[in-house]
Amino acid sequence: MKFFSHFGRYILMLKSMFTKPENHKMLWKEFMHQSVEIGIGALPIVIIISLFLGAVTTVQTAYQLVSPLVPQSTIAQIVRDSVILELSPTVVSIVLAGVVGSKIASELGNMQVTEQIDALEIMGINTKNYLILPKISAALLVIPCLIVLSAVLAIWGGKIAGVASGIISEDVFDIGLRQNFTPYNVFFALSKAYTFAFIVSSVPAYYGYHVKGGALEIGRTSTTAVVVSCILILLADYVLAALML
Image (cartoon, rainbow, N blue to C red; front, side, top):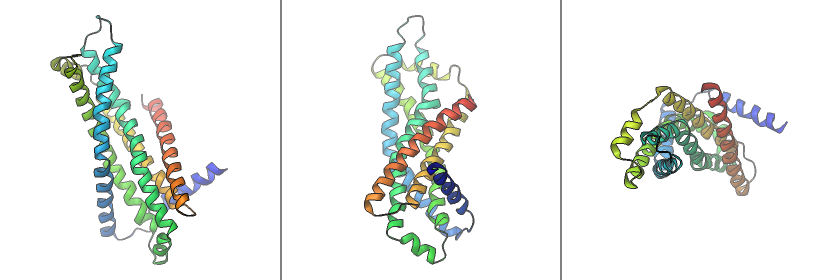
């Protein structure tokens, strides 16, 4: 019953975001602010994770392909498809659930506990539209861009690691990247990116907006929001793979 209660309140929150639009100029300003906060704030960790993710994938793939019958260009193909289909969208989204999700939950939770949201409601402002919609919209714009950047950097990092360690030459790696490339994989990765971006932004916003208590509850709510977001990301990852592949 608790699940259905949370789910119903979550759907009502999403519905309330569009019932009474606020000033469009104010929403645009908040949208741009959230885009910068989410994008620039998460950029360093995304870059670091992506480079090492690609490097480790290349080294481990080369370690497993010990047969002389398998061409070296296969390493690049496996790294490319692994990064695009799974590693960049899923791993980066889970990391962003911790970085961005906890920030959204704690920010809204602090506003709820200090009664700032109540003050805005008394002024006649649709707080769900003003506080939550810009965060979700910004995440839907910025997080897929971060995932695309992550995929590019991971492949580049894999290439650098392979060449630097002598596993594969640069020319062979480039040949493997172009072999048997399926453009549908990019569409699938973007579908996952937008789905995960919605989860990363909306679930912590729900938990932060409905927090009750004091500072201790804000911390617990932020942790719960991150855990639930990660579980939903993994569940959505399986469902999308079953439906689209």
